[in-house]
Amino acid sequence: MVKPMNNKILINGEWREGAGSNFSSSDPATGDVVWTGKAATKSDVEDAVSAAGAAFEPWALTPIAKRIEIMERYRDLIRRDADELARLIARETGKPYWETKTEATTVSGKVDISIKAYHERTGERVNNTGATHAVLRHKPHGVMAVLGPYNFPAHLANGHMVPALIAGNTVVFKPSEMTPGPGAFIIERMVEAGVPAGVVNLVQGARETGEALTGAKVDGVLFTGGAKTGLAIHKQFADRLDVILALELGGNNPLIWWDTENIDAAAFTVVQSAFLTSGQRCTCARRLIVPEGAAGDKAIEALAKLTDRLIIGAPFDEPQPFMGPVISPRVADGLERAFDHLVEQDGEAIRNLSVREEGGAFVSPGIVDVTRSDAVPDEEHFGPLLKVWRVADFDEAIARANATKFGLSAGLLSDDHSKWDRFLALSRAGIVNWNRQTTGASGAAPFGGIGASGNHRPSAYYAADYCAYPVASVEGGKVLPMADEQVGVK
Image 1 (cartoon, rainbow, N blue to C red):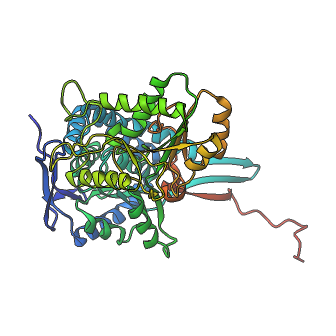
Image 2: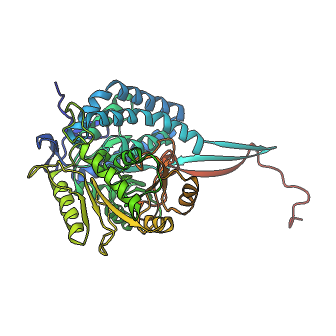
Image 3: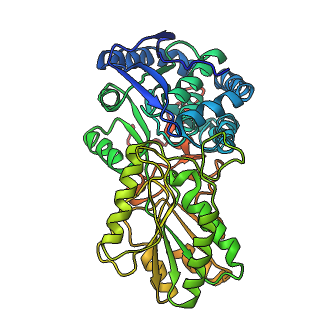
């Protein structure tokens, strides 16, 4: 039996209904309503931020060992309920169950990674020089607003919140309105673990709720989502130097395929890069770059044949699908229009991206050769849409890869180590992989990009950096007497 989802907001340790209008989320595989609740109003948000502000001082003064102890209890509760979380994520996102089980595991794993990162990248350092000590410490900022995305509704928001709480910050969290359930789930477990009232707060809602949160008196905004929204947040705080911003945005990510002996293995890596999570990962390959001529033809043929074999289905289908629906019928329609527009602009359809059922969210993966087109927008199409360019040589391939305002992830498939050396040196991205999928990223490494992909504050292992600021101190046990040779004193 599926448990009902928590549809309340949490303010100062109390669950209550939002004072705003009703909204709901739907299972993209079936269209069934999954979650219904009331949005948090501006007044609700102000209450949540006020509660977080009042809770900050005692939480910051709580010994780090105690804060870590609470987070470790939270980790254990997530492990206990991992299957329930995985099923909940699958229902709201439409992602295959095998994939949401991985996300649930990642949520608990983030705690140990964040503890290690806190001690390694922040924490405290002491340099003793006789009677004087040089000490480096790190302090929390205060109230952190966390805005989560829909594609990884538990993992990505959790990746901001856990390091923020370990560092001593308090949090007000707004999940995506498309996936409110997993956000409430992880906050429930934090409360059960013993996070004090006001230290974590949950507000649900759409754009108006998010704008109320970023417009409130917060000390930091930790956002994962689209570049347009990230840019709007950046502009909003242009005159607020006191607010820390960590913006993890999307990408128009390139993947170069050049000189691989095993064509089928490389094709599988392209499919994992472009179509995993129905193309709804910010690290998904959006642009495939291959050589002109027979080598490129052979690569594209292998890719097209493998794409035809991909199983597309609902989260709990057997056999398990490779990919499920995209998040909503509206998104599906938008992707189909984008694909059709590329074809209209002299693109050649290799595999059509089309909505499988009118009014549905299932789409077939699309591949379009845009080499001849002069009107390909530098945009992130957030779904299973792969654009192909054919180029004359490897230098042109690198130039094409870098021809974007984004810079999140990039990849090279090649057996030639010298090409990897050149690509690594010249590529412009925060995640650069060789003979592995572009969607392969480690939680024990920084995660973020340059250009329109972020603001140089990568998350994952480096989240510790933006959750605390360094404080340098020179300390002595006593005030030192003035030396006889003190300059300028009689």
